[in-house]
Length: 229
Ligand SMILES: [Ca+2]
Ligand SMILES: [Ca+2]
Image (cartoon, rainbow, N blue to C red; front, side, top):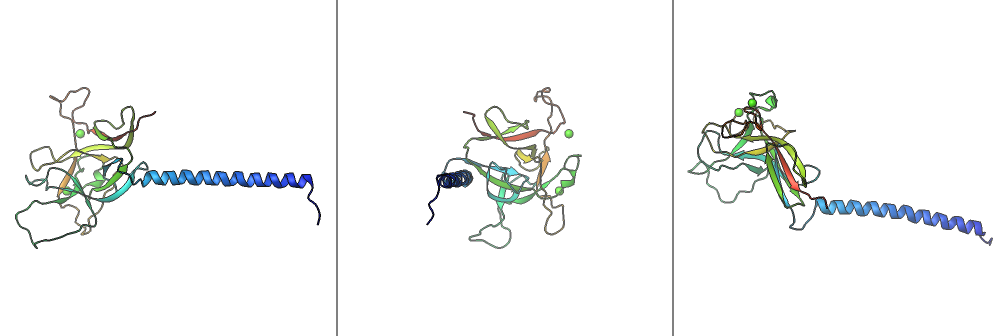
């Protein structure tokens, strides 16, 4: 059997080292990928959730818990809940009584945006929502801003929306994503008027103008605490 020369042995060592180097790079990439997955699917109780109104997906910084239908009380009825809910698409019922009895009521939500250039195409379409989980446990909605303050990371920005200003039904202010999705109703009738989403305009007086401008639609931002250490 022929003996391997010193030159051949050196070349074999170089090949082995190159193979190990490539293997290390692949392992490093895999570890980074697994770390990223671990953060996204983190099972610890750290972190919090927020609702991304007007969208069926979460930003890349967040994990989708579920997407569903924005819903609340009927726009012209004075009762039921004041808050807006993100109803899951797969409800579970337990005990029930057919038909309507004395009760609270809940209705799907529509964009009521016909009086504007912006989003007029969404009028009467349903408002979706996505429940998003993030590792940060500190989230706030900043009304009137479409960017975040120092040490806060922008989750999404959009427009402040609420029910109609004149006393009708109860409502709250929510932040709707500035790339909204609108869902057509299954029955084809686009105008059921349940829970309604209107833009919110500033009204000068007790509201300081400037800095605010009467009649302009307010923006909003959802921001998570993310200090740069
Ligand atoms: Ca409507
Ligand atoms: Ca206006």
